[in-house]
Image (tube, rainbow, N blue to C red; front, side):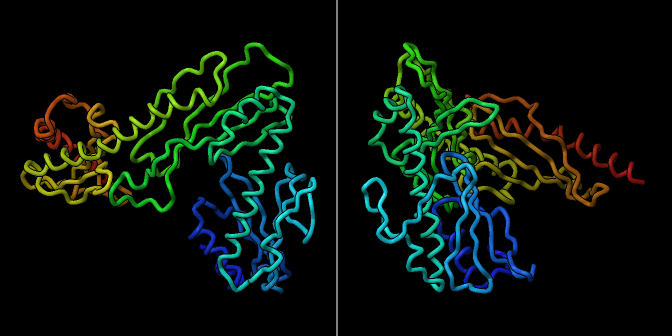
Length: 379
């Protein structure tokens, strides 16, 4: 949420932006431009663009909170002039009137509308910059994917690296949020293909393959990790329009398999219950974690299960936590991560549970000894 020191009207607009934007906009810093340093009126926004963030400073005036803000763009975007004066034309085309022209400071949604408007214009600005490059391969690539929605592109260069063009291509025409029942995701989850081409101003008979990488929204990793996907090779002479269909088909199958694996993990947790009792705590949506209370004579402890997304190919990681022993920091004594037990992904869930239970019957004695030794070392 916005800092309490912002003027109320400004704070309301910033909070509305952070709460209601479909983009994961972040506030980098909030500071004051007034003589009174306790009254802040400006902030830096980190706005998602082309699988990275652009930094824009939003400048209000605390003494005149009803006035529209100024927006300062990065130094490298000095040629980006999105705000139109009424009646202004560019290249013979009438530029639309900006939302700043009829600013209503009492409408909390106005900042959100302004940032989205400017971001849309920034997308067009970067697309135009890329299109003006004297690179025949890039011109061809753009022409083959022109009709595909949601693609973003930008130029990247620096004093110590060559010019490159980065493409962000949204993949899979499916609502990932609706695939998981009860998922807690606030933002729409997406998977993108990042494609990076070097800028080549000379014609090349056999241009080199671009760098390609799958990128997903961070929250999706609990269901499906794009790092586990093996991308198909980029063949000589291939373009994005040829590469994408095969890659998307493979990706779609793996995503659907990951969704189906939730049920496999749920059945495993259910198979633990006859041996360990009902779980003290369990992840009801993705079934990646579960905790059970166990006992050996008078020694009671918790068994934490961390179930990987690649289950049952990868076995669960177990950790034991004493209910009776504290370390020097005053927190419960924990065992190291345990994976050295017998395992086969071909076993039935009930057999997996039985083997883990048999392992813990012996392991808990070693853990009890470890806890008692830890207690003695404190004295």
